[in-house]
Length: 394
Image (tube, rainbow, N blue to C red; front, side, top):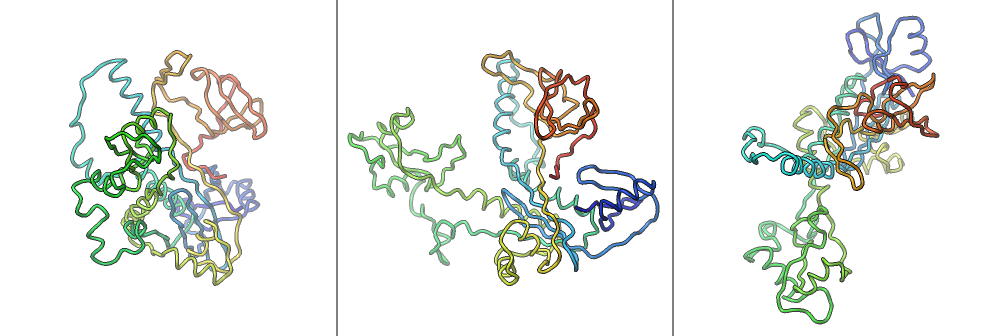
């Protein structure tokens, strides 16, 4: 595992070995400027040794592969795990804020409190976070390594073809609902105006049911809708009936990848775009097993260079914006300020180093771990060593 190096003007240089970094620090020729990832800054010189490095990024919805490759070796390799709880956290925050506005202290609603410039081009928070996560990692690597070329493997998905592989030409203009007044009319016609519960004793009135509930992320797409009679529809929601129908395949991740492609190419206009089938062919050519890290290595132009140790990147949630939480059996909890010690920060207790797990008892105690066992100690007896940033290198 190599150490990142920057010169006295904060320009990225080639990384060095831990031994060389230790000698530079011991002789006073360098100083530590970042702990995770470990980075030193030289106190002398203005340029430094550089090579042409290529950053390959295997963009993704759940995991992202990154690899920095030179002509002779792979300098850095990592797989980043994306957060998938943004929508859930937004829903929780919305619930607390509505409660605060209405039950705790009432105020009149404000509907027109967003300007047109703010709304224009706005993405859903979960999608915006993924775009920001990609740009954040790319920019950090550019600041730590002398990268001269950026290669992005993007995905361009045809939604209509994913739903119907046989679609051709003018058929794109005539979807499955073509000729029907609305979605409900199409669903009733598709199901032959019959209850799809396959149970006896159906009532006469027919209704439309979401196979995957809207509250659970289900959509109004026709393949997520089914016809049920009123009797069986009520029984299903009351928990007295179960359907054996499989949930439809969601295309949300494919939609997100199309947006990521468009945004990243606009942010990095000089980046080279490549696609999955090219990466696959190059992997087969050099007999490389498929993983996110290996894909990124091939994307960056790697084939027989010396590989480096693969690292993991995790994203730390830096702040909980839910000010009030009402839990069953507990009094309402109101946090009036952000705690000084946050999860994953490094702290010292009785001369030993620990990783913070979380604050307890309204900021009075800290739960921490040494990787084997956990303990809870008073915050007054703990000393902060390092504030962990949003990007955590494991």
